[in-house]
Image (cartoon, rainbow, N blue to C red):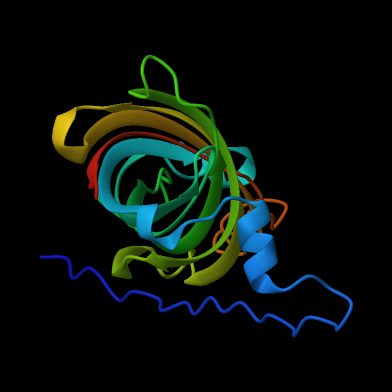
Length: 210
C-alpha cells in the first residue's frame, strides 16, 4: 500500500504599516471620509468546494483536481470587502514514468480585496477581486523521484456572484485565475526543465454574515 505524504506548508503573511506624518489626516478623519462604521461592519465565514487545474508546463504533467477552502471575510464599506482564507487541492500527476494515483497537494493561504455593487434589493452582489497568497506544493511519496515539494507565490484574480438569503445566509459561485511565480516542482520531469503555468479554479460557496 502506498504511503502518501500529507505534510502541509505553513505560510505567514504579515502587513506592516508606517506612522502618519504630521501633515496627513488622522485615522479618524479618513474613516469618516470613507464612511467606515465599525459597529455596522459585517463579518462572516464561508466554505467553498470546486475544481481546477494548472495551465502551461505545469498543466502538461498534472490534471484537473478537486479543491476545498474556508475564508473569513469583512465588509467595511458597502461596495468593498476583504477576506483571508486557506485552501487545499489535489492535482493528480499525469506522467507514465510514475505509478498511478500520485499527485501534487497544494496548501494555500491568501488575502483578497473584493469590490462590487449590491443589486436586486441588496440580495445580489457581483464582484471582482485581486489579492496575494502563498502555496506549498507537496509531492506524494511515489512521485518524489521526478517531482519535488515547492513554495510558490500567487496573485489571485477573482470574479464571482453571491446571493444573500434571509438570516445572513448566502451562496454563490466564483472563478479565480492565479498568476503563479517561482514554480519548480516539475523541473526534473519536463524536457526543458520548466514548471511554469498559472492556476484556474471554479468553486461554489456557501456561508453566513453577521
